[in-house]
Length: 517
Ligand SMILES: Cc1cc2nc3c(=O)[nH]c(=O)nc-3n(C[C@H](O)[C@H](O)[C@H](O)COP(=O)(O)OP(=O)(O)OC[C@H]3O[C@@H](n4cnc5c(N)ncnc54)[C@H](O)[C@@H]3O)c2cc1C
Image (tube, rainbow, N blue to C red; front, side, top):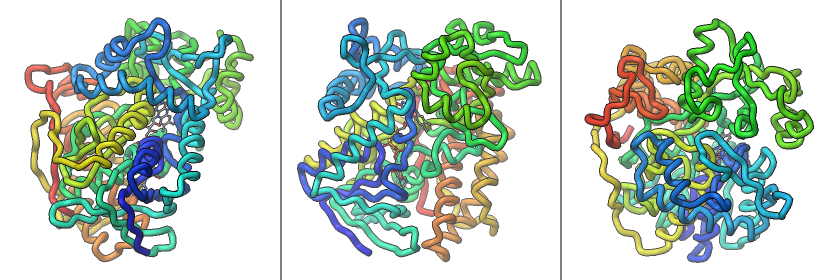
């Protein structure tokens, strides 16, 4: 099955849907999406979307908080775009009918989250992403210039004369096809599934990073993976995210003796940034030899159940009362700050290829993302990429970064790993706490697997599970390689052998580029 349009969008999360709505004003749009169109990280976002709209807030304050979380590595121009244009695009969602929670005066109710200095997070109870996806999805569904092709897994970019001309895809029934377009937007989201423990749904296997890298695009900052501290840790249950908004509303981390411990590690206590909280939890759990818990028992139980109905329901299914019981929690891979390198309008280093949302890296998050900034990023940069795609394209002037050239080997071992083995390796050796021996082990193993996977891709082209493993191995290798290279600790990247931030050598972005596998 072959399809053709003026614009191709790969992915139906917030970035892809917002971009498609603008693109449809300039031509016919095809959206390829690998599962049900509603299945995306966007649909799982709980806490909300940040925007400087409160009376005590300003874009400058939002920028300051964003840059502080980014630990010296945010690209200031990208942050400026995010915080200044954010209120306008969030206002547009409200005008379109987004059912955000309201305060007594009818204004959007603003939540507080970790490392935000004021209340700034718009939310729809604890299912904000689902509400935004519903809204954007219904507008896309009503636009006759947009065609959504679902259950279509994009496998490779089509490159002609050094220019991206679309993507090859394979359907769940193993039919193969090509989607051709003058301009292509990668909006494939994140890569949490590269790690064994993750908050991300099954779709988040880093496909966009792997596809773009195989086609020769530059990727950048991939060592920076955010591990969310509070993920439900109940034997046999899925790793369900317990939103930061819980701590924003007063929930505390406690140890097995019931002691609130975060203040001992960080002055900001429970509302310190995610990497600091994750590492404090690992240290506390190691120190006490017991799990750590989230406690809301000191808050009004009616408020807790009303404000967090989804989370309360999931906890109840695991036999826990969110309002009264200590809830066992541990960190899990949540968000990839790095990605396909883009300028402020989504242009990548490959002509004809754009990227927006979690798959892209504008540098807006630096070394660590401020909570609730990623839905905003998908919205703002999705719309900007669409505008640039409609206008005549010019080559990207990417932000300054050191570029290393390397290849994923075409030859290697014979054994294609299981997805579990690759994800387990990433969790053990490239997880919350990293060091040279583990990182070297991971890179060597992933390189060997990458060779075997490349051979498998040539002989078993329409095998979807192999495609999934291929993305996990390629994206995993790029993440591990970047983590090994960065000999310092910064933001979400923590190395026990280089525990300090080293601005002299490492206050810079490092891009990676690989040969075709
Ligand atoms: C549990 C959870 C809670 C979160 N809470 C918040 C929050 O409160 N606030 C916030 O700002 N952020 C939050 N985030 C992060 C945020 O949801 C994501 O960063 C954001 O939604 C990413 O949007 P996106 O459009 O880039 O990608 P996604 O929403 O992930 O969409 C990616 C799309 O691409 C498709 N796709 C992927 N690969 C392929 C392929 N090969 N071929 C075809 N289609 C493909 C997927 O099926 C999907 O449709 C949360 C994330 C999770 C997992």
